Length: 373
Image 1 (cartoon, rainbow, N blue to C red):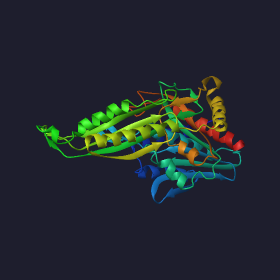
Image 2: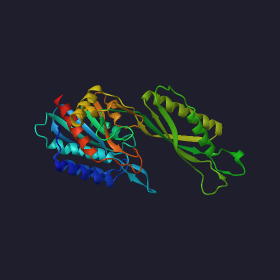
Image 3: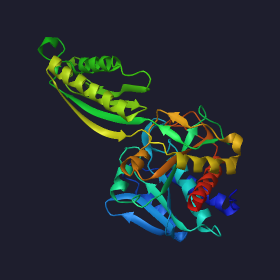
Image 4: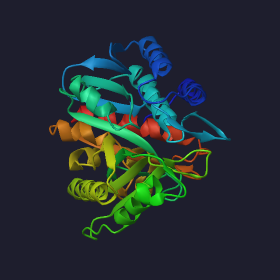
């Protein structure tokens, strides 16, 4: 077992509380990047930042293999106590704290095996394009093993347990506009009611039927039309559609059917509907070798009875773009039990902070096992 010093535990908690209290949304993680950069430099890491975006890379050691650990750094934008603000309700503050904990441990670890260790603090996971940005920057081109981590809700596992792989599903978001003209409330026959167009789209989405052996969902998650004058029929509206599928092929079919439905609605109601894809997260590609390394790491830290089965979830994470775009990568994401409740993305999400130490130790052990390979 990798032993964490008391000072490291305090440093992990200090980092977590700072990051939790200073959340920043996707592509705006400027202060977060600066904070992490300072901590990496203080530990003697070689540091890389980007002139055109947030995010920071730390590195220690040299030569092969190259083993990387990734943390996502952005917060969600959501309503908390009646106010919309940035909020770390997905656990990215915890992910950063654990990877920083790995930095503290590995930089001081005696007799560390030969090789390079890279710490990736990635922006914009919630937008689904942060990993792709770092792929374009060449951040993982020479990486052999890549490990990620994500807190899991109490409904999936309790503290003291962990899964060596999270089999995420694909996720996409479409944001659209219905473009027409407002009408007098007494003359609905002169045009199209954007609310009725939206209602038809909701019903059509619910009528989609794909192979039931592969889980999938599609649903409208926002719709805005009309103003304070209640005798005007709105001709314009905005909406968003969230789509999930456990396989990338199923997601392609789902998107295609929704796009065709939108085309039919334009003809039926004689309105223009513009749609833009604002998020696209791929389903997981599982690597058995990386998963086995993580399984051994969990066994070493938590014991064999606390290794959970592969965790299949319809949630998404852009972590999997690393392996899709760079197939040579051997990657997996640790699913960490932490008594998280009420749930991920809930504005009042809480978890047992002792799990930060479990996650740190498991990540450190996984890195050491990969280096030894």
